Image (tube, rainbow, N blue to C red; front, side, top):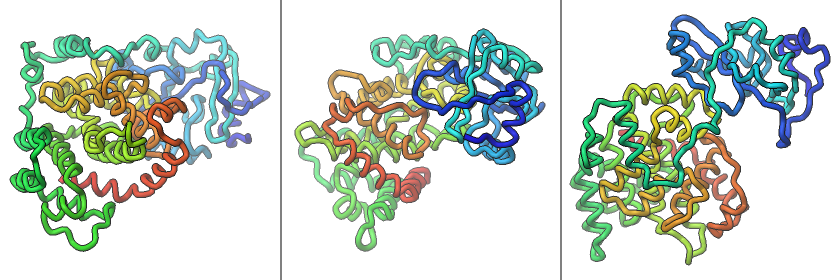
Amino acid sequence: MELPVAVRQALEKFVPELKLRETSNTEMDEPLRMVLLEDGLGQIQAICRKDDLLDLAALNKDLGRDLALVSRKQQARIRERLGLRRELPPIPSLTGWPTLVDSAVDRLGRVTLLFVDQNARLELTGEHFRQLTDNARRLSFAVSVASVSVNLSQPEKDREQLHSALKRFTSLRIQQRLDDTLELPPLPETAQRIIHLRVNPNAVMGDLVDVVESDPSLAAQVVSWASSSFYAAAGQVRSVHDAVSRVLGFDLVMNLAMGLALGRALKQPTDQPEGYLGYWQQAIWQAQSAGVLASMMPRAERPAFGLAYLAGLLHNFGYLVLAQVFPPHFKLACRCWEVNPHLDTSVIEHYLLGVTREQIGAQLMSNWGMPDEINVAIRHQKNPDYQGEFEVYPRILWLGRQLLIARGVPLGAAEEVPDSIYQALGLDRAKVDEQFDELVSNRQAIMAMAGMMNS
């Protein structure tokens, strides 16, 4: 557990005897984190409790600045210079930048500095840490996550919370219908025709081919999808009929076309958070993972593959809605997601807006008459303990996300997956791990498929 020279020298002046302990899952005294920020006026570093939400809006308001997270490339260069690979410990003198310490830190009797590369920690008294940060400015800019009560299990309150957020953050006149209130486009014609196909027991492949071919852009994307290396189709895919009959199948094309039609109903935001995948990349990863998990479940309990896949494609639709309905506040949300990567996006959205992308996305899907399975999947995907009709759909979205995050796919904050989730889905953990290792090994092919969706 040898610390880099620069880190050791920064500490020795204030902590003559460095008694490092191995980091473990046992409880430790208040771990801290340091976030590097910059704007046109220069760079600063902010220190707060590790699990707190750094309120960037409050900080910028207090300072009269427009601070945002330092780019990942610049952070990597700083760490490399200091002999660190993954994380910068909260020691101000390592960079020499002006430092801000959240006032809650000064009220702590003991604190913990984490050295992630060495799997080590250093515990200090509050007084020692105050000496270490003696030249820092004290401000209140962090919020305890315990004070942010995200609505995970009361969808009956979604409409009220959404209306409240609209009144606070937009100048829109509240009307009776949610889709009027949001000033969003109607359900795209292609999606309407696909929904009619879905509920038509006599629908055949030719009906689906006709719908897809009526939209040239959609037809081109379906053919490109079927031609991708991920499916390794034998011979060239020359038509939509070929893509449906020989490669993808009726169900997959139906849901792929639905996801594409809805995804194109709203514009992709130009301002996106650094360190997060784009909309279509997230959609493809979640769709593929949902398909894998659904197909591995016991036949008697298995959800409809097509609906599981579509739920994955549309899981993040509320992200597009947030960008359209709350443009300036969406930009602020992007900056807050960047400086709080340890928190689920729903916590930050609830804190900033009073409503989450899952709430707003599910409400819109309901207005558009989408299948109940999709509405439930989108609304409850952040709640692995949800119990109710169609509970399997949000559960496989939650599990798929966590399995992908654990394999380095940046889809948000990681959570521990208990054995009870596998048991509830009738899945063998070891076999699931094997399948997801294989899925992630096809990263390049999946990213290429996502690129097709943007064209």
